[in-house]
Amino acid sequence: MSHQSELIAQDIEQYLDAHKNKDLLRFITCGSVDDGKSTLIGRLLYDSKMIYEDQLQSIEKDSKKVGTQGEKIDLALLVDGLQSEREQGITIDVAYRFFSTEKRKFIIADTPGHTQYTRNMATGASTADLAIILIDARYGVQEQTKRHSFIVSLLGIKNILVAVNKMDLIKFDETRYNEIQKDYIEFAKDLGIIDPIFAPVSALNGDNIVNNSPNTPWYKGGALMTILDNIDITPKIIKETFRFPVQYVNRPNHLFRGFAGTISSGTINVGDEIRILPSNKTTRIASIIEPSVIKDSTIPNAFAGMAVTFTTETEVDISRGDLIVKTNEEAPVITDEIQATVVWMHESAAQLGKEYLIKHTSQKVTGQITSIEHVIDVNTLQKSDSDTLLLNDIAVCNLSLNKSIAIESYETNKVMGSFIIIDRHTHATVGSGMIKKANESQGNKGQKVYSDFEKDLNALVRKHFSEWGTRSISEVLK
Image (cartoon, rainbow, N blue to C red; front, top):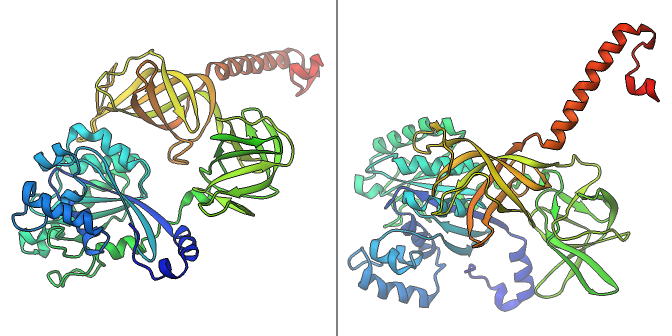
């Protein structure tokens, strides 16, 4: 739901244009079971007046039937939509909600806290710019708090907001709040989480959610909504090298041929020279077309996150799954051997050597997990050996693909560095991966063996035929 604006009635096109150009912040809520994640989101939407009247009437009715707050409205029901969630009072699936303020648009993913739903939590976190990690003020940092913090750091989320919830149950005790803050910082530094933001809140009563609470005069930071509205989320991907996986070849008639997709990173201008991978053909961008609900428009440039269609100056063979890059920028690595951190997401265990479908950007290739380096215990961060992966296991694995693909590490580029694993027979998504590096492929190994042999031969020949000077054997044979 969008915020109220007089522009809607006065000039709908101007409103839509202003709304389109707002920053979009995707964030998740996570933490231990019953820390109040769903209630926090419900309170955020309720106090911001982002709930439709019929929705409000529905949850007021349901609160009397299955709510946990007595006569009060149970705001958690706004996102805990499954019947089993309402019966158990927990979150199982990932629930998404959209809203906006005058400054930003937001997409919230409410992720489950139970250990057995780690795969759901990882799914919700995969596209997030920020994570709100809730901690129950009564219990402090718990095992699942650490587990979710590890997954958040693993998925490369840099903006961490720690909401110490249920402060009303400890009478807004500043000393206890400071203890929790110290405990979390001590744990999080080993995960590479730097400078997390802390806020004392009561999601149930609305303290420090949309407005600063008089119950915490000692707290000098902003309310949760203020932090979300103002935190710097300038996408690093706009400054990175240009990457455009082709999703669709648009050819409505013989006069037009365009290449549609979403820009993964970087920027592009009309006239820029581009390279098509894996063919290595080059051409230039002739036009950039941005689709619109009102009227498609031609624009001079585009940047990461935009869904656009390109046309080229010359006819070049470009297909779905190809990657467009700039010729004057560093190209990604093209390989058929990768090492990645894999989150296993299926009840059936992973099988080494089994053929799976690997979906990377807009293409699918077949591949197999050839070996497991180690499985990571996300509670203790200890590493152990294993020859299989079970549901919710996280492990560093080596994979071999039947076709070379263009990759980058997940840390460098989330889109180019991520993939999902699909069972070829059931078409179920069984795992997700974050690429760490390219392993040495068999072809590269053969090239290295030949290079080492030539190097040794050159040294031997020079030793006995000094008149060759510094020339290599290949130069002499020419």
